[in-house]
Each structure stands twice: as C-alpha cells, then as structure tokens.
Image (cartoon, rainbow, N blue to C red; front, side, top):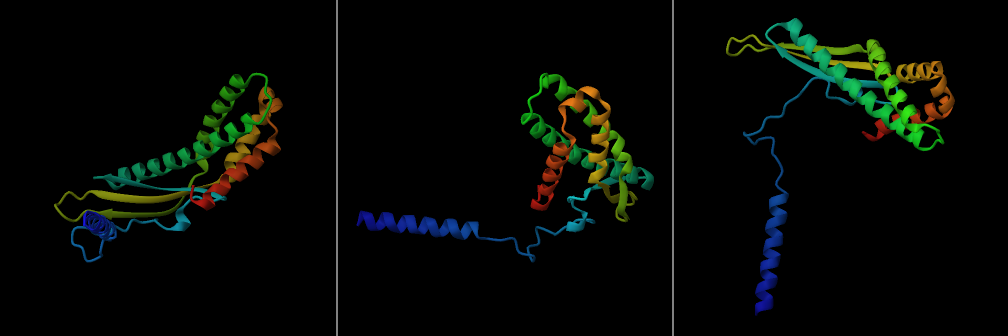
Length: 192
C-alpha cells in the first residue's frame, strides 16, 4: 500500500513537472508582445568576411541619436575584433618558443589596440532606420544602425604592424598567424 501510494505521488509529481515546463508562450498571451528590431537577420551577423554589428541610440535630437547608435555599433565591432585577435595571439604565443613571452605579449597587446583603433575607420554603414515617438509629446528619436568592416583589414593591418617591429617580427611566423586568424573566423559560422 505504501509503495503504491509513493509510486502514485512520484508519477503525479513527474506529470505536474512536465506539464509546468512544457507551457509555451502563446502569441495570444496579452502579457507579452513580440518586438521586431531592425537588422535582426542573419545577413547582419558577423561572418568570415565581415565583422558586423548593430547599434541603437535614443535622444531628443535625431543627430545625437544617430551618433549614439553609430558609437554603440562601433564599440560592438571593436569588442568582436578584440576577442578574436586576443584569442589568436594567445593560441599563437602558446605554441611558440619565445625567449621573453611577457615582453612579446605586451607588445602584441599594444599593437592590437592600435590596429583596432586604426581599422575602425574602415567601418561602413550598411543600413539605418529612424523612428520618432509620437505619443506623449516628447518627440524622442530612436535610431538603429547596422555596420560592417572587412575581417581582412584587421589581419592586414596586424601583419603590417608586426612586420615593422623587429623583435615581434622574429617571434611571429606571419603565415602561421594568419592561419590561426582564419581558423578563428570560422567560429562565426558556428554562431560564436
């Protein structure tokens, strides 16, 4: 009897758990409304050829809203580049016999910051949309922007900077460096 009661309780709890977890948000649910944002499509995501990002800006002045959106998108692209380039540098330096790894790592990080700042000038706008709030009389603007930059610009600029520094030039095999960079860009296909 006790076993039957215990088994019944376990089965009932299991059924309640499954039923509770399987409830999905219905489109007819009035509590939630789907928000469609501009540039939320695959063609606006980074891939092997381009670093891409979107930005949003809000302000009472449309020019300010545009500037904020562009700054946000540029910062997002810079962050993507920084993550990829740092990963490439770590992988590369990890597999090399370098006399003074600390100095080489420090120089590489300095060059990376310079390259990111220089290559961000090659970012271009690939889409933008503006909206104005008509309710409440505030007139606030929301601006969305999508931007991209070729991934080759980063690799080319990094290679040029490394080649121009004699100590880094000795420690870096540029061909191997580019191979690791290309491999790292493959991660964009996997959604990383």
